[in-house]
Length: 469
Image 1 (cartoon, rainbow, N blue to C red):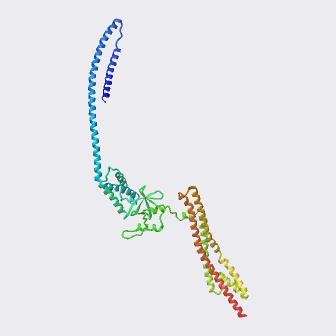
Image 2: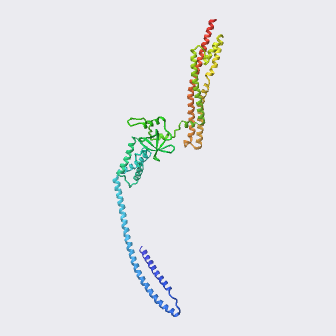
């Protein structure tokens, strides 16, 4: 360090002397040229004198500069010594500060003790509560502090720093928010807020909040969107029996007592799942072409069965009236059979029996018409359902072959076809079998009356013949 300082001072002195020498050379170069040799000699003499004088002046200035340089070197050495002393003093102070900080850290750890666990619990509770507040419908209530979630987030982050400890005010504020959430969970409140419609339009509506479970407005269930902080309509409402309780709740007045209400205990998760549940039309469309064929056949079978039941009921009533009426009526099967009997009273019993059997056989197709077709549909419907099941399983296996079995959604289409067509086939077959049984029993009842009355007429005719003989 000392050698470096001396070298710098020597360079500075050399530079100053070189500058003075250059200035002198420039002045000598500006002299006037001699006109003769004598003048030149005289100029040389004068120049030697001047040069000697200049050399002496330079030596004097150099000595003066050398003294100044020595003073500068002494001053630099003094400054160096001061700085080295200051550096040593700061190093000692730094070591002392490190020792003091370490002792204070140990003292802080000892004094905190179980408080560290408390602050860790506070941090964890703050983070968990922030998530609860963000998803809670209580946040939709204007009466609740809208900045509570942000405060909890900042508080949890600040608690994550080891140098930051929670204050009494912060702990009390956290307790207040927790107590407020618990208090609001047991209240039913009404307030006005923005409701986003399904078409994207917004409207100010009255909203009723039932604890932390449900929001209702305009006679329907609504949901809270935590991303936008607004209430939105649901794409699909639950069953009508639940929606009717919403209207009862909105129309309730203070003092009415308890009002039945369809509560979602999952705080809206079940209502959100309603969007994924297909309605009757969507469920029917899942059956595909096979499902449509089953539905068409089911409609035809039901219409035919109802028509047959009504017709046979009316026809049975006419036949029963004809049983108690001796005058034949051609408007019912029994009346037409009686007409055949009255027209052939003169023939023998065997011939009359053949005539009456023939008349009954003519009435039977009219009575049993379309019943066989209904029965066929009742047998074909489950077979079509089985066909749909096979088609759905083929589709499922094709999806597994192409995409693997890792994603259930790729197999959902084929499974839906398989299950829905099976359900549709059974749904058509079961009532069709019942309706066919009812219609067939009515037809068999009419045929039984015709056969019974025919047998009675033949018996009377045979008895009359026996007496006459």
